[in-house]
Amino acid sequence: MKRNLVTFFLVICLTARTVAVMATDVGACYPPVAPFPDKLSKSDPLYQTALEEHQRHLEDMEDYVNCLDRKRGMAFSQLKTSFDLFLDNFGEDAVLKYAVKKKAGD
Image 1: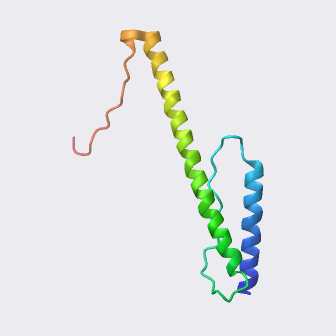
Image 2: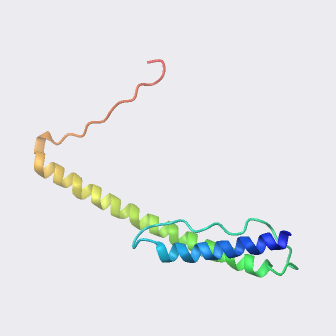
Image 3: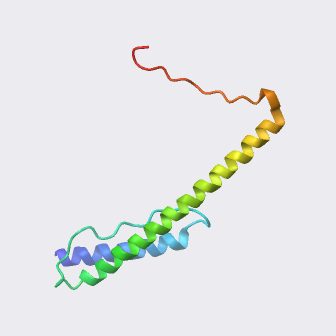
């Protein structure tokens, strides 16, 4: 029974990964599907498949983090461009307002 569940889980993970890659928006960052969580004995016929899936997951996580880092850089660039436009358009009136949160007991 456990072997059937393991096989089912691996098939779902591999299928979901393929569909996720095919359906992703250009430039979008999506976290990879988590690998099979159970520890298998080396004698289990699915051990090698689970090992390879986990290795792929770690590589995909690195790609995901790099994608997020690129998106973060783009967001900061957009923020700077927007702020520069704000300063150019409004000069001395370009003042950022921040809401001050009151602390409990104040």
